[in-house]
Length: 274
Image 1 (cartoon, rainbow, N blue to C red):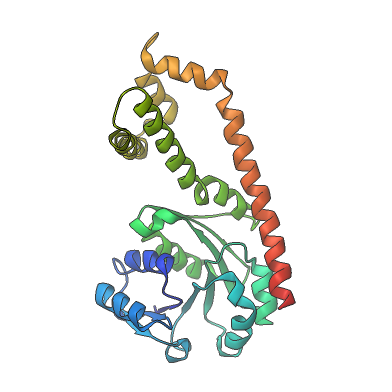
Image 2 (cartoon, one colour):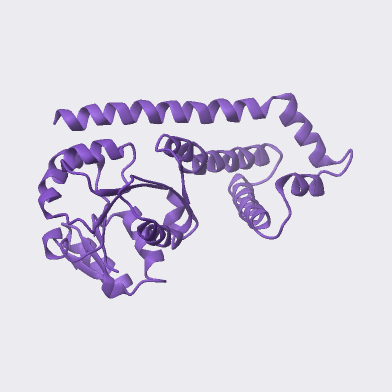
């Protein structure tokens, strides 16, 4: 099984770093115009690197489009005549729908839309996946394996649900960064060094995530295990509920979904107009 990346940026590298754990480096190909970027990827992962996709496009089984959305309008019609029936096109570009990709390719190919998040770069990402009907179950299994190398991969039933994945996983790293930042700032007001307090918050989030990820204990049980009756944590939880934190989070995530929908529509118009 051969996988070709068109574009060798940070997100592509995050996926490649996971891929080499389960796929032979010799089966991975990357095209990037930067000679320096080619050299870095070749040295780190011992994969095949080129300055142009023409050197491998006909040889691979999966084509990962890791270029900016704005480049799709000119690039996809260029490669359309080169794509073969057995190949799967995977797009990791935010906001570009399968419909737009199909229109630009001007033919019904097997297409997967993938939405990885930033932690994929460190092997702890989440990727939402959606495929058109031309992608077989066997091909889906390989796509899952490609993205499970850099974290968790999950298939959604409708393409519109990719926007929900963005709200839950794509944007949420910023939520957590923001919360850690706030905790550090309040820690400074309480007398701690702000840098130290922020590092404490980040480390606590890391440890808490690991606790939540192992065993059969659910989140409610974990919360209760820390909230002793009339204890300190219980007072914080009461304050969160009195401030209606649940509604604040819901409002923020819905705003993310709505903005994702608008951006996708704007991008579709922009791409088709080029």
